[in-house]
Length: 337
Image (tube, rainbow, N blue to C red; front, side, top):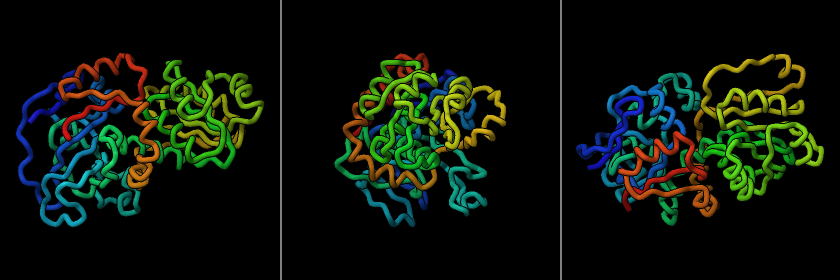
């Protein structure tokens, strides 16, 4: 079968590999229908930071159809349409036993510690497989995992009713946070991104306004109302610092982007203005809830996405996305149906 495998930084190859054999106890085989390219995939490709197996089939955002079942699997059947959990957690450490599998002491991710979804078939533990509504377009079902990341960030931010929120970064997670907030929250939404056309697209779909990271401009957009809540999905230390300066006191700032470098921060700013910085890592139990939201969000998610039709397109898409040459939020590859 065909698979896209990462050997090292900047070394991504489309190859023929053996299909998975009969799945072991507790595992299932999935015929992959569609898979998405994530910002963390691009980061790993550029830097090799998380390469723990060489080579490894990449891809952790995907959906498919169950085609084989190992012993002991009771909640899945051959033919079930499913989305995958990206978190390969141990289930035994103190964090896992407390329900915080997203901060497992031995946490790895599908596509890194085991082969992922940029292939015609993949084998996964059944605990990482969730059924979805059969009517979903595969390109939408493949977005269950990033939607769960966004839902976790929104829940961690936990803005009170009516509060305005600024979303910094209109890539996949920032855009999905905005989309969720447009359905789940009643406050005004502001969007900031260096890519103006992408920010305008996201703001239009989410019913928000585009601003720069400027306090007077944000105040004008809000009719002089206070801005206390923010989400950073860029990981840019400069954008985070600007966002902190933008906020009025008494709110919170959720960080969900992958950062490079360190933040030069005066903690007195947080103390005196009582601003909470909230780290958001992957997701906890939000995947099932995200899957349940997909039918309602399907139209917008398709507008957010570009869809490619072959695994052969992935290396070129990695290079293009790494260079910032897209105005869409998500690139999805249709693999089989």
